[in-house]
Image (tube, rainbow, N blue to C red; front, top):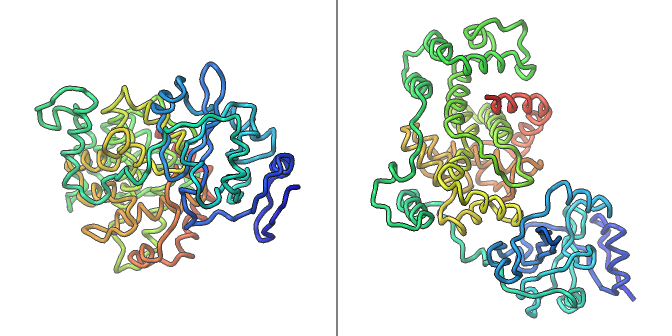
Length: 467
């Protein structure tokens, strides 16, 4: 008979899962998912498909799923099942996440051989977020009787993204480009990557940013010479998000009465830089759209900056700009490696348990953060901005201009905790908050206020996607 050991402090497994395990006479313990659980014991389930049908793939969360190796093992070129199809399948069973249980679907199953090595019990997704099922490896093996085994996952421990050696970025980017062009490239990096020149409007705005004598008339003049940018600024000022007290009639009106010099100059620069590289047509499923992620992050950073003690507060406009451009390296990856960007997207889809820099390091040898920070330096953007992009995922960074990457890191993790943004760490260390002079309660309050206006922010983000 099935033995259930229920923890009354956590939600119970969905009834369909309880019935399934009961029928198979599988013993399990319900366990709340929490930081500190060994990823080697946690089973990641991913449903892949091709023209022949679906395949459930199971592997430890301590590993990265390599689609090319799956193709070698299985002889099929597979990608993640489309999001709508996955939702429909899970909805049929009233589940929210995919359990790593072969008998739940009618699909064949392929599992990583490591799962059958003797050791501690395995932890399987229950179908209910935050709730895992602890099952012995012996019992789990029973469920894999008709499944195929293979070696196709790459240990994450062998993938080492460059998080803290910015001096190596140039060499590593060059090596990555050489590897994907399959020929020896002797030209300088700038010529190899073929980055488009910085737009004239962006160049003018950058000059105004560093000019202590710049006036509202100066920025109005620059914005008005670019019809698309002028329309954008007026549209932003008229948005319900800024609650303008009266109709906006001109660019000057938008700057003086609503947005202010600092916000306009950074919005304009963010838009000008963003338009330099177009949004890729391909993208991973489950991704928060590029400009939505940028606007949410910038808005949270704006609130966090205001909440900081005055003596620790960095330049507000520049922190906002860091939020707008924090994921700029994503656009650059698509631009520099167009034939391989789809491969990156497909791997991000099947490895939702891992931060993107592990996937990028595995496939390219570099990360989007390295690429984005390099481009900011190449374009002579402020050092604070390139530092913010380069160290945004390092909560312990305490070097030059530390407040900027610290704020981006905090904003990204706070938003992830609210379901916005891709996979990655959601833990906010006390030390990170202390360096910024923020309490956990105050930081969470900032995010709550921003997301209370989510519909209005989404409207603003949509404007960035308009040509």
